Image (tube, rainbow, N blue to C red; front, side, top):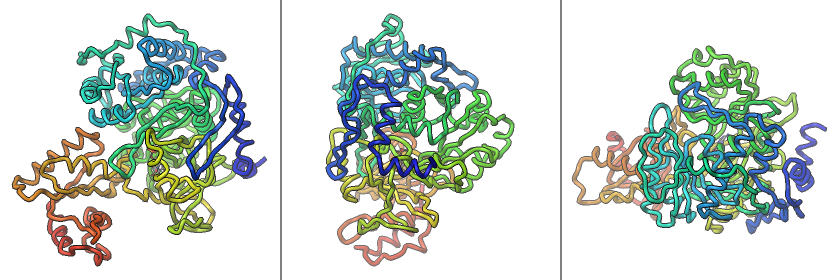
Length: 627
Ligand code: 6R9
């Protein structure tokens, strides 16, 4: 059968397709009674109902039984060449030990557990231990501030946190335990903080601390896995939306795992024995699906990259590719754009002949970066797969591969739907646009990896994803279809920025800026940036009695954003002005602000609907004083 036949079968006979795969690719305690039971109008979604399984068994035990000495994890620590390997049998022992520690301290099935750790075997084992005991993990990126961590702890009612004393990235120490302690101050729900050693420097201690390494030393290497239902919660992961409050996206056991497993294998043409190198942080969905669950469910060797692309120099990725003989490399366009600026020599001095597939994820990849990735990094020999997907889709949804062996790949577009996915481009009248067209990127049919809800807020889930285009999942992205039917992504349609692949709601930053006692109103827009893709540009108006200098205020505001959210969220430019452009109904006209931010003040477009057109000349005058 051809690829086209198989794709058609997967969408026309979805239950047969996914049912057969679930039976053969996952290990079950009890078979499921129904493949899918999904209603995209009510948002009630069930896959493999009635089935019972355990995710850690599927990711570890079954491989440890077959090939105990196969390497599961290669930890590429911050210092280059400093790797640690963990075999499947060692990983199983670690997972069981942590499971025992969690259970002994009172963590139960269904409890939410926060993980605030660097990319490391202990973090992966902690995630898997949660799945083994049936707890729901919420991994929080270890670059988020104490306030951002506290917000996520409170929203999920977290009682248990796992962290390390410190982290190290690019040679710099990150005070993880200190940050956790500051967050816990605001979170009375927290009962215990497990701390593992990363640097061994003197991290602060509190009476909630449990020394994880010491507890693991005496813990048993056996732990009977909890028998989970297919639709029990597996994990939640916070991501930004268009309001100030991040959303706890919920994924469940069987559907998510099968989808991560299938996409890891077929998008990257993964074969037994390959070394899979996804350089994402485990704090993002890419780390969940393609550092942890996808590769491990397939019994692969997966690389855990703790460092940054330019440490100790811009050859880091390729030196690592040579040394670890990586076969599939999966990274972000922002890193590719950064590295190409340093020229080809940092790439060419390393042997990259092991590489077969190069993946891109997180944001649109521009043509220059795509060509460089293909021609220089891959020597023109590797497939470059620009993969489009989201925290909400669980795994890759639109991607050039899999496809027929002679099917072409065009630069800088995700092109084709993955098996079982029927993308649709919808217009402003909610019509399904056919042929060459541009509109809202939706998915018409349910798939196993789709998110089930927003933790504690199913109404927001429905409002965001299912009500804008009834009967469809709405991604929030725009897309166009070309003459050959291939899909291109045009970018977000909502107020969500993408800064170096990090999703950030403009409203999140505005909320923080508004908190400052001198700020009357704030509006944040995105401006294009050559390396980061986008940057945040903030406009603020001050209260009437404000008389201090603007530069000091801007510094204070930047500090506030760093403290409340994270460094990547700090607006790179700010303008303190006297008024924001608004419509008569009081809506801020972001379109105008985007133009001012981009320096295109001669081309503001239609300003006839402004309540007070004089604001525009004030903005233009003030735009000479951007900090
Ligand atoms: C996996 C991940 C999702 C948003 C998504 C879109 C953007 C991701 C992309 C892409 C163009 C690609 N995005 N991949 N845009 N081309 N190949 O990144 O998840 O952090 O939830 O971000 O990222 O805008 O809606 P997440």
